[in-house]
Length: 226
Image (spheres, rainbow, N blue to C red):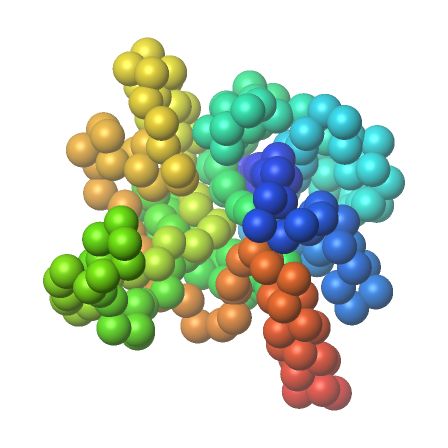
């Protein structure tokens, strides 16, 4: 059984307003993310984790039948994921973690990552880095280059066997570590994580102009599907 934890606890500082509930193609951003997991045959249940003061609004933003709980998270992303892990049903054997701010995820991509996780125990969606990368000083002066071959930008969902992700987060708590995603937590155990190269748009809504770009993608998908 696969349970998805959708994390919506960010501050939206760079956005300037709450991106979780920003309207995108007639629905809140988070509703698109939830809908993709709702439509995925491999997903059995969904736990939505958000800020305490947003819970009523989160509850009102979804009518998806697979959403079993809407709960409060913590200060950091890892704290919110940890709260989601506490709410897993006894039947859950795999856990997917996804950013609510990635509304362009598709059921097909979720399935691809889940298939890889079933084979390896840990898998994550990722995009090959195509830009030239440079290191810079604090004054923004170029001080070196970064070889981009085999470099990937991490995305979500990231899917793991339940035993593995729970063990990883127990280590994070015990060692008082700060991790920015679940792959980083699992890496601490010395376990291998398989990357699933992304075959579709799945960027994170970070700045206001990202909403316009996401709307273009959704419109293109809609016209292609007709």
